[in-house]
Structures are given as structure tokens and as C-alpha cells.
Length: 188
Image (cartoon, rainbow, N blue to C red; front, side, top):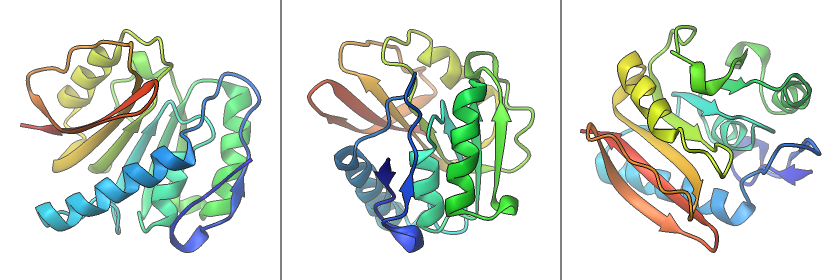
């Protein structure tokens, strides 16, 4: 179990599936949300409060649920594993009302985001660490036009996992941890 670390559901415990999931650590979640809050102020851009977010490779839902706790009004979660989705559903019920989230069972690599009917302010992407298809997902996000003009994509990737960022994005910030890099991308 891990805790929500901020917002109106702070300290609520959420379950973590025992297989195929690597939840974002408390240290990294604190850093991510601190950076996002700073961008809100710097860019005069609302990323978290009364916004819609998308959590790709959701797993336990820790990033999306953290955003809901901190004031996002709606969250889409995309996860393909049925057993993991069961835990994700239980976690969502602990943090939010049913009308404030949707869980989409889908393979993110094949996703064209046709089921997303709201503009997204913030996308969390925490793919498997050996993932070589991050660029494909970024291209599909761009083509789908679901990300708002000043929206941000947060990607957690292994330091050893080199991938190309398509030229229609620029990297706002990159935080390096022991084995992980967190990227903050924005459309040009």
C-alpha cells in the first residue's frame, strides 16, 4: 500500500498490485507535483485545479489519483491488465466519485484516444522501463489533439532507456534520479 501525499485525500492508502506494477515513489511524486504547481504559477496555466487528466499505464493509479486529490475534476485511466484494473477500480472508489473518472481497458501502444472526449491538461505516462515505443505514444497523443494548448506530459522512464522526443514537443524540464528520468514535455 502507498499513501496519497497531497490534497483533500492526503494520507488515504491505496493498494498496489503485487505483479507487473512499479508505482512512482513518494519522492518522485512529491517532485512531480511540486514542479507542476510551479509551472501553474510561472505559466499562469491551470494544470491541476478543475482540469481533466490522463494517466497512461495506470497501474495502481497513484499519479492520476494524486491529481484528483489535488483538485483535478476528472481523470481518464488507461490500463490493459484486467487484474490490475480490479485494484485500480478499488483505488478510484477510495479517492473519487464514479462521475469523476473513467477506466479504459486498452493497450496504450495501440491507443488512438478516440474514447477521450474531453481536452486534457495533464498526461502522466509511466510505461514499463524497457519501453522502446514512447515516441509512438507521443506521436499518437499529438495526432489525437487531446492535449490542451498549454498542457504538459510527464514521462517517467529508465535512465538507460533512450528514446527520441518528436520535434513537435519541447522538453520543459528533466529531473534525473538514480535509475529514472522524469521528463516534462509541452507541444511547441
